[in-house]
Image 1: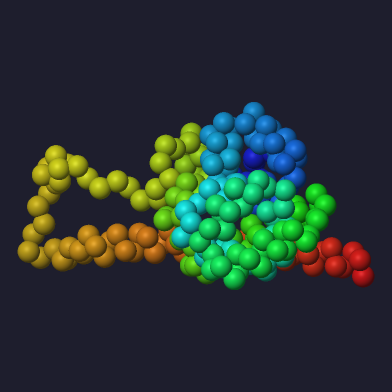
Image 2: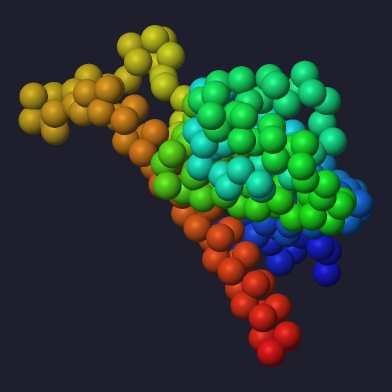
Length: 230
């Protein structure tokens, strides 16, 4: 049985994405290599949607301030430790002066080891997933490539896809003209604005559901670790 077989069912893509996101970099690349051997389409789709700290740092300042203002200052300081001063200044540029000063002071005082820094980065990524679930961050605006279509497993199993959109494209003018005219007895047409609204809402709900699944998995892992210690 191939590695992907257990993930080809509905919801499997996000489960595999969770596994990759919580794995060390070397292990993650090993997994992705195995996946690429079975299905380049799956490997490409997963790699594009893995949430990494570099992706977060690349987001627009208006979204970074939403994230950084909600994080514990020490967690953020440890995650930024070792980064070039200019890059730190750029990332913290939109924070209020008092918040920025607190984090930069912590940067000077703290000296996390590699494990502590990795733990803080992992905490930030978990928080970001939570912000997405709560609607604080909307992926369709922040980073559309991270959106996961509801039927992504079916699309990938059929041979991959070229667009992240969940819904079918609007008909062309030619197709619209050739369509059967609507009679007076037909149901009234729904305004396009409302259709677009519901499409966005469904995408948002799918993202929130996936984030909640991710959070549930993380909590289960923590509980299992606590039980082992006890």
